[in-house]
Image 1 (cartoon, rainbow, N blue to C red):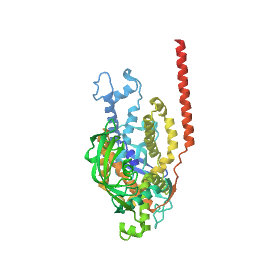
Image 2 (image 1 turned 90 degrees about the vertical axis):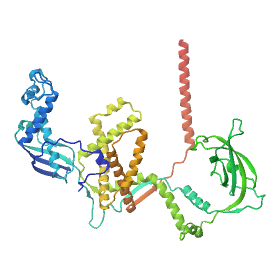
Image 3 (image 1 turned 180 degrees about the horizontal axis):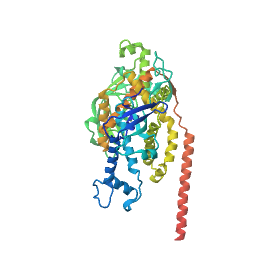
Image 4 (image 1 turned 135 degrees about the vertical axis):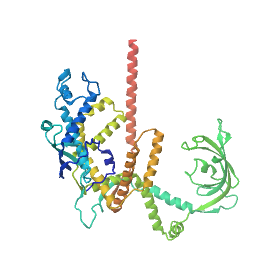
Amino acid sequence: MVNEQHASDTRLLLADPGIGVLADAPNEVEIKPDAETSSVELTINVTGEQTKNAYDRVVVDASKNMDIPGFRKGSKIPANVIESVLEGGNGQASGGKNLLRKQALKQLVGLVETVLSDHPTIDPIGQPEIVQNEDILVQMFTPGEPMQLIVKTDVWPTISWVDAKPDAKVYEGLEASYSRKPFNQGKYEQALKDLKDRQAKLAPKGDASAVLEMGDACVVNMVGYMADESGGKGEPLPNAASGDQVDVVMETGKYMEGLVEGIVGAKVDDVREIKVVFPSFLKDKTLAGKTAIFDVTVLSVDTRTLPELDDEFANAIRPGLTKDGLLEEVKNAVDSEDAKEFTAARNKALEGALASKVSMVIPDTLITMQCREKYALMLTDMRDNGTPDSEIKKLVTPENFEKYKDIARPNIERDLKASMAVEEVAKFENIRVAPEEIEEQMANIKKEVAQSGEEYDEQQMRGKVEATLLRNQVMDHLASLAEISVTYEEEAEFDEELMDEIMEKQAAAERERVEKIARAAEEEEKKM
């Protein structure tokens, strides 16, 4: 049974609004749990002192807000005077003689909180409701006299596992499936090439007449200048952009475009003047996108021999490592890096499988609270995406909310089951979030908030951070025990013909728009 304070996002969003407590006097209470509706019914024997206190409080509150001739506003006004006014006396608008008693009954409902504080295994949700007929109850209510109050409140549901067995954990061996991009063969081959590049052997390439070719290596001195308006050498580049004894591998894509190509065919002591354009994404904005000229002096010309990818090569990387072992490690490293992008899809699949192993009755109060939160977020997103407030207001009706609730209910029930199941797994497996992980995340959030100037509830945010980290740890644990089927989806190929067709339609539409404007202008000109 789940009776602890829930740390999940769901729990944070469903914090009880709070109910006033009347008195500390103990009450005789009968509690009837209803597992079918995840609620409890409480029959509370209310004392005469409590009915009097509730009524007196309502009278005091009414006195503060009523303006009655003969009494100073805010002063204590006798109950019979207030009742008379509410019944239409003294020329005041008619209210209803039982209004004070109704308000007093609402005060008495607050006793539920006091009663349940002695029953920690009962975790209430939302506002309690009176079961008895309100009109009859109002007639029975007499300040100072004891009475019986029957109240019903929803409670957090009890979780149970489907087909649970004493010698096995239901959540082990979950079957789930999700889709992701295929294995990145290009990245895999590049990773192997990088390993071989690090083990490349260099040797002088013949005599002084040897020339640089693609695939070779060399050492150069580079002196750079900014290009002036005429395209010639201008101001010298900062030292960071130039350099002595620079190792260069004769391969394209490693350096600024044009540098390697500019020294192909050069010999030792040759000086080449090479014009390049710095990439626009450079952090140094004084150089980004600018044209520069380098005087490149070749100091050495070497051949470059890459090792064979075999057991000897693998052993050189780590003693005892074989070729097959190396290939497997590189493959796993590349794939695990790409898989991070699809962790959310994996977790969603696992949560669905986990929810199917859970049986519990979810009270309507919980569904309604979750729906209100999601409905509000949906409307906020609509406003952020440009939907006029007038259109959004049309959606804010009880009928529309109920329609949304019916549509959202299955997903909300699944998410709640998964959320509570995650907490149970964490408890059974003793999975906990390290405090330093929470602090690291909170430090990042504080930094972002400081930059944006937004306000936030630190305590609530800390709870959400801890819940998210815990969920991720539990999902990783379940994934290690699950049977997960992964479908690799090929990326859609670029359809050039379709793109041409779309562009032509857009161009035709633009031509038609321009022609309409021109015709309208001509008509306007004729009128003048």
